[in-house]
Image (cartoon, rainbow, N blue to C red; front, side, top):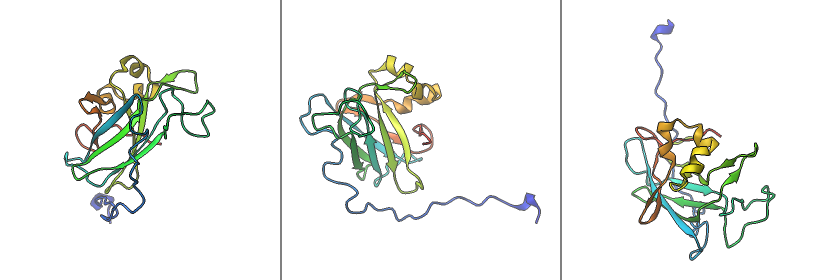
Length: 190
């Protein structure tokens, strides 16, 4: 058979049989900090597919530093966090693809070369149709100077950077995640 007559077969995902197993989500999973925490912010938005339709069964995980830029993790050698800060949250989306986390704005983070990363929240998305998780970051709209100097954000094409910056609204910070298509959120290979 000549190579010219071979055609690429369409790719397919395994499934669809993605369902949220019991125990994957827990009642206070979206709460990185307890209710009533001083300086708490709400991070909310929607997960959308390539057509702009909501993804009703996605799971989002966030992890981040505290307001002083420290992680609640044994590998962070700096003094520990306080005030009920967990540093990690997990939330499923509702039928409209909506999610909501209660957290604090993280402080800037040191880089290995002595620089600084702008305050940001790391986000993982798991959903039907995804063979692997996708990972992105949420940057803060009131950190223009820090965002401009951030080495990770600076490595992203300028026209794509807005997909990584939340928008302030009446409910807190809105960050929609577009899994593909026009306006696709920037995802990072880890």
